[in-house]
Length: 285
Image (tube, rainbow, N blue to C red; front, top):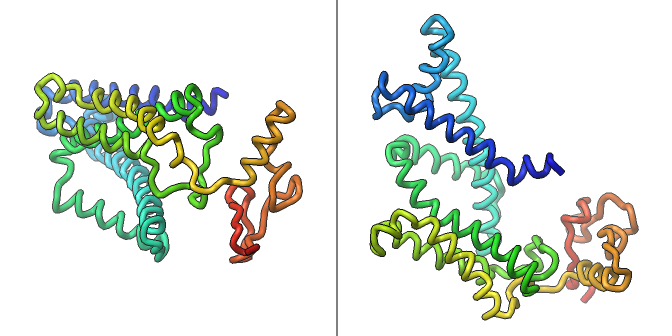
């Protein structure tokens, strides 16, 4: 349990600690290097390692290694997640899927363009401040949907359906509340709603998304959660209601016998795990 908590939501504890360490290093090296470059990681590493490692060449080598290692980790993660997002977006809306490698190259090209010609680092704080309004709205909509719509109001389905075959392209509950909260908070971020809301625009975004999600769910009666009923989930619910006990997914799977590790797709003939398969009625028509 602790492993799940610390590896999931618990990451913010380590993240907050790293942010505090970064703030400390900026204030520590600012008198010697100046405020203009004090926020650069290479300057922090050089000053930190230089306090107990003799030799400029050794200090610079270690600092460069840490900068390259951290940037490699960050960029690989961004390239992977970005290519996945591009792939899902174009395959979902335009049914166009040339391959993940294409989107990976596109993501890397965008990153290089923003890093070199655009010099994103020079106004990174402004970009992150702007983006925080969208990110907080997204988090607020998810929390509100899980806590209020699913647990309290019972408008959202009792299970989380992730298969695109059973989902609408857009669900106004989450997407609508996120967009509305983001637009209003961004307007406040640029100062059009006064100095107070400009300073607290992320909190405004969080509040609006949290409140709008259940309101939109009630207005739409939750009909945009599931586009097509999943027969496996339906059987699970019926059996759970009858036995009053949770039913293991593999025991009632419509494609395979109990305990079978993988299923063969009738279209491409490849094997997939049960959780990655979905029931399709068209071959039986």
